[in-house]
Length: 188
Image 1 (cartoon, rainbow, N blue to C red):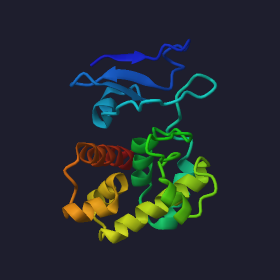
Image 2: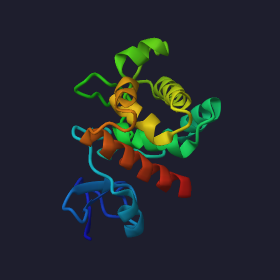
Image 3: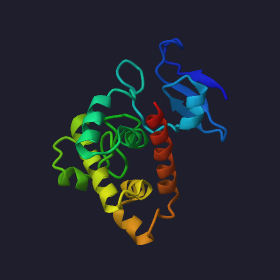
Image 4: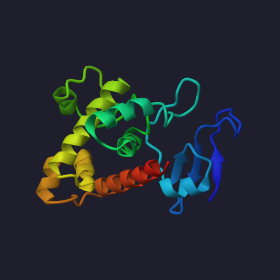
């Protein structure tokens, strides 16, 4: 495996993000130069991910205090909330999906309205609302994390219709990715 530093006028010591190709040839980004972590995370870049004004990519620890607060308020593990944020937006608070999902936890407009979120791009509101939604899915699916994650991605109606994780490649990959990130953040 080869680890390369982003070409942004930064030295390797100053870089926050590392790029590598995984075993399948996929170009991946990580904030860790540790090859063991790179292998474990298997991170894949988000299309359209934006750089901060200083030229660096979004920080993976910038929202930890909010994540702790949301996780405690909704009795969910910090690692799981952070894993969902990592998978959904790559820690980009301005993320907008083609389907209209917004912010760090990629909240759909109906969830923004339901959880009375005034600004879905506000990290605090987005994380609190997204964590509340994740908790409701965990409750609905009787604590089954994989089903709750599938519902977060494909919608709870789709998961119920299929009586399990739907046979949708994107959803199956999403659940696996969040599970990997959850394991990583649980261990660190």
